[in-house]
Amino acid sequence: MSRAVSLCAAGEIPVGGARRFVVEGHEPVAIFNLGGTLYATADKCSHQRASLSEGEVDGDEVICPLHFQVFHIPTGEAREGITRAPIATYAVCVDHGQIVVELP
Image (cartoon, rainbow, N blue to C red; front, side):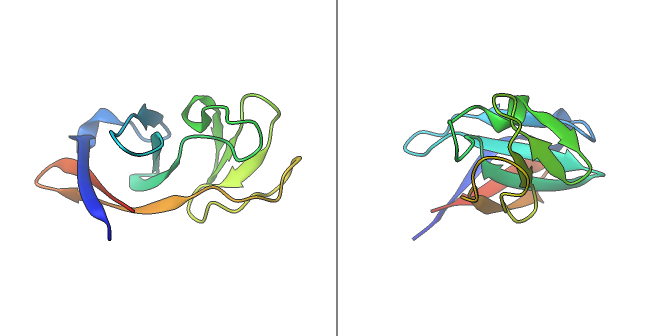
């Protein structure tokens, strides 16, 4: 069963930006704005648990600030780096001007 969680106003995350959200009863979530399209992932790197929302966004990838692990934001796939473990991704939409994420 999943639940929809409203996080913030859609305009609060600039194009090319990312933001971390703490959700009660769930691991922190990162929202990325890639060219106006929003993506939601787990905020913790699957290698050493660093905050991915603090990493560098390069195209459709985020680079972990701790050990430079690269993840594909839309799919969560681990690319270059130490680990092959992906990060979780979540459905995200804008509803009545609010960013809403579907969490398990």
